[in-house]
Every structure is written in structure tokens, then in C-alpha cells.
Length: 337
Ligand code: NCD
Image 1 (cartoon, rainbow, N blue to C red):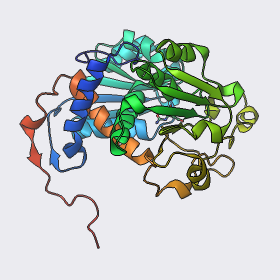
Image 2: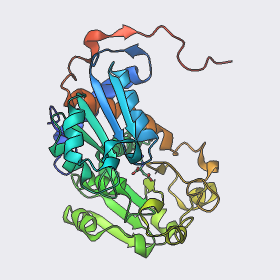
Image 3: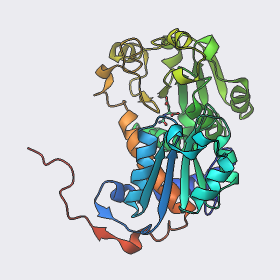
């Protein structure tokens, strides 16, 4: 399903394709952990184009490609590209696809990556188009949800998920809704300030899928029945003014006390990151860092596995990963003292 295709949205994916992708992601684990190395994409070039701020998406896509043996060319910031000289997305795509085997692109305008893909001669992965979608994040989030549920001895059938925060502008939530609609009977709690509620089209999508949905703005009530809590950042860059965004900063703060007093014992905490740790926001307090359910860095590690799997499946080398296996001969990680 992925071979030779763009990944612009998760809307046309089905569970069979996703399960296949996740099987490949598991194959990637020893390569991501530096237990082995593969050169299956040796000679291939990734055009990694980020026209909005990014740390983990940009770096994990780049690392994933490097870990498969490929080379990464980066373009960051609109002002550093010819788009700032009035070039159309179509022209930029024609040019850059002549230099790359695959392109990842992030851009502030909804549907801009789709427009870019129309001019591209190689597959394009949407790394986030404004508040619209973030397909690779939704896939790694689903992979994480399923792994975390397994860790606490539960399955997708028992999923009770709370989305928390800016559900209006959070593209990771939007893409994840499409994937959740592929499963039956999920309990979903949507907790946000009223002005930042999940757009109706996603609520309809979830309710048409037969899910039980509760909508509210009370933190303690909203998190009390969830085995997965998905916190989000107030997407300040999508607001008309800083003042308006500031109204919602710090609206929902999760810390150890609230977690212990109100959540189920094994509740898992996820966040697409970055978490806003400034004093006026502090949406996930550092005192949660050592909680076994605090999954945010397992989630970022999973991002590399899922992005490696995407590259391998799109470029159709997923069955050859181990053909170029080598052992790793450098010191991996910190030596125990
Ligand atoms: C998210 C994004 O950019 O949409 N971050 C990410 O890619 N992991 C979420 C956010 O910025 O709040």
C-alpha cells in the first residue's frame, strides 16, 4: 500500500496496511538501538524540507533515513528557500524531486504539502501542513498506544483515551482521529477549553465509527477513566494574537499529584511534544518524569522506528533490510559506572 506512494494524509489507510507497517517498524528496533546496522538505502537521498519550527519530526526523519544508510539534504525556514522569492510550490517540487529519492515536507499552510506533491516526481511525506494533518505522528502515536496498552496488559479493545488541550488546532490529534475511526468501540474523552474544542468533522468521524464520546472542560473528570491520556500544547502560532493564546496557556496542567489523585493506576501519559515547560504553561510537570506511565520519550523513540518503516515501505526495500546487515563496532550508549 505504501510502495511508491505519497503519504499526505492518513485518511486512505486501512488497518491491514498499518499492521504491516508496524511489523516492519518492529524489525527496525535493533537498527535503531545500534545493535546492528543496515545499508539498505545506501546512495538514496532524502530532501528534508521544514518550513515551520521542528526538532523531533525533522531530526527523527533524518536519523531514520541515515540509519537505513541514506543521505539527508535539509532545507529549513521559508526565508532560506526560493519560495521567499515567489516560486510556486509546484516549481519547487519539480526542482527538488530531481535531487531526491523521497521528500519530507512541513509547511504552515493547510494542504500546501498536497499542492507540493502534485509537482513532485518522487514520493512526498507530509511532515505537518498547518493545523490540518500530521500523518507520520499519528502512525507513531497509534504504534505507541498499542505498545503501551500491551505493556500494561491491555488491548485496543479496552482503549479509553482522553485528548487534552488544544484540540482545535492540534494536527496530531486530527490525524489520530482518522486512525482511531478504524477501530470499534473506543471510549474517547475530549477535554478542552470550549473555544479550542475538536472541530465538528472529527467529532462526527468518531461518533460515526461508533465510539462513545464525552466532551467537557473539566480536567479531573476527563482523565479519571482513561488508560491513555494524550496531552497537547496550546498551538500559539495558530492564534490571531499572543494575548489570545496566553488566555489558554496553563489551562490544563498535569502533575504528579493530579495524576495520582485522579487517574487510573497504570494510566499512560502521551504528548506529541514539545511540552511547553515555561512557568505560565507547564502542561506536563517534570515531577511526572519518573512515573512508569510517562510514555512521552518512548513515544519519541518509536518515531524513529515508524519513520524507518515508512521509508523502507515507500521505497520498497522492507524485505531487504537484513541483506546488508553489519555489526556495530563503536561503543553504544553510556557505559555503566
Ligand atoms: C507537533 C506538531 O508539530 O504538530 N509536534 C510534533 O511534530 N511532534 C505538536 C506541537 O507542535 O505541539
